[in-house]
Image (cartoon, rainbow, N blue to C red):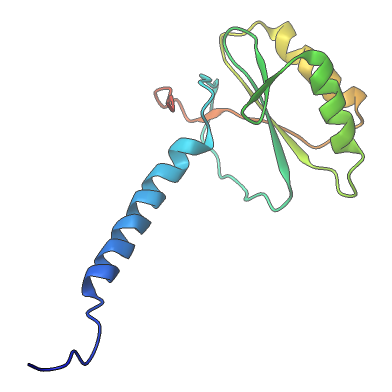
Length: 135
């Protein structure tokens, strides 16, 4: 009978690479769970963002979300006021369903302006592509 001189790590490496691939595939799916059909704009080069971003979403029914949490307009006002008090102003990324009436989006933009926040991105889909829905 001979002693084991080392531990075989090949199965562990296979497992580690499999887990890495699973996480790489599943992470984008978890990123945006609110179903919003964004409006379409012409394709253009996107610049990477380096600052902190807060996402406000409005679904087709008009429900407002701060990140992935549903909030009322009053709660949104409080969250925006707290964001305005931070040392560096966050970028507000507004994701609104394209079927919403214009006034619903303007109401949220007014709340952002009243809080004193000036860095606003309005998210759209690029270049006439078929709408992509994440689940």
